[in-house]
Length: 258
Image (cartoon, one colour):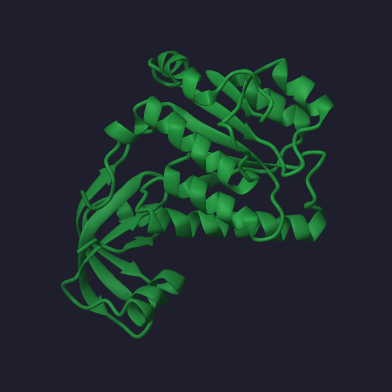
């Protein structure tokens, strides 16, 4: 049986021993999952530290876990950063969940010119909090020790700076001459020496406008995914899967439950 995963503070996973799981995570474990004494569980701080143990006791809204082993997963290479233009409606959460499940390391919200959605003031703060909450829950579902990080939103110049500093910078565009599938061997070769970073830009439903395209093309390569045009909420996940597979991340990383 696959061990359920819960998040706890990093300080609780410094060494093996009994860890109290309370708050929202404890209530979910005790009341929703109805875990019993002796059941195996994983605890993680979401930043690479993972404890494996068994339930030692169960309370009304909390439980104690006897953590037997603690491991710390190293920083991955290449790191995959996805700059995601703001999708509309619930497609934003779909994009974040897919990127988390696939294995991207960071997602950066981008208010591109043609984005229908706008993050302003309190609305923006709430939207950012929702992205982070979805990344956390998707990380648990995907059994990740290192959860997808949701960065602060950036503008066009922020995107250009990220691309310029990357080992490999890629901008998805349906009119690009080069196909991502063809470019994968070159990307893998560029990322062979660690540490490396790939930054991948996903535009909005209305597309990257001409001014944005020109600015980003000055610091990165344009690539297309295939003969069909994907939604902005799925394009990033598909491209991320191709890159992570080509660079060895999908063949060398250990996953929960193995």
